[in-house]
Length: 478
Image (cartoon, rainbow, N blue to C red; front, side, top):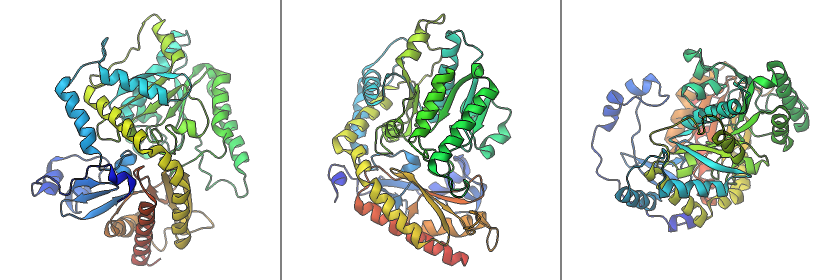
């Protein structure tokens, strides 16, 4: 038993589980981004219990959760009882209260704690229920800030290609993922997209410094072309998830973006829905990469996803400007903003993370994770074109044509390889991770495990990936 498991309350058996749940789900539950085959032909997993870095299905089969749920279960699965006690106590005392011109203890205490952890003068917290809602709120806050300052022409936003920021109207408008947004267009006007930081397909021999110069030059050119007086904010993830664990090419990249924002009066928003609360070995990715945003958008890890919660952390300057303006308030509201039970869960989550040294664990073990995954990439070099990422967020980009850095249609299409060979191999190995076809047609395999992972867990994760890649390539005849 490792240090994290010793302090966790583990339930050996799941509560009584009714039979036929998969069929009920297929008949009545509309699932997130789930293809028709899962409703009709494919087996649908039903997970009923979790423990440390693993989840168990209704048949008792164990799966290593290499995705931390959905980049969010920082504490793993054995602190539910302790967090649940905090939630139960809060529900007994005050199950609900709005934050509409009133406050309550969990929201006030959590806002203060987040301000303590956040960089610089990011001291003001607005709560939402998830990442998309939080990005929606950030859009409105940025626009209201500029309007209050008499710069109402600043209504445009710049985001990055392939980036994902949510599925609500405004958040989807920020997305740089064409496949996700195209069927819902026209969306919010005035969103422009610039290159992301992927270096795998940059010109041969280009240095990280040259990549940084190109990206910053392109960004400034776009600002000038659109008109600086029309741009409200630039929004970027410190590590971009979609596209596969895209890190900044150099430390100067984000400081350069910050300098451009300052030069042209543009707000800088860090979307830290995934990178916030420890995933990169700091409380926030912006701290890890050494830049100061005007707002941070958070969700997921704030409560280890034990309860739904998100929000934005804004600078004092932004909020004070709005409070001094003609409206006299942030002109936005949500019924569940600062919900007492969700805030109680988040407070307990942060308490456990500090007590157990979870963020420090990521910082310590990140090099070892990189080393072990590097061994996997080397062993399966026939199909692994690139391994990249940082902290506990890594991605393999798979190719069959290494010279062209692409997955060739022959002898097997990328979609067929993923659907008919790779996904079944991962299931057989007992490993959960994210598999997708990227915007350039290459398969991506992402791992972003719970932050309580130990060296032994990393060894197991690498072994499972080795097995899955081996099974998939053998099955596909590669």
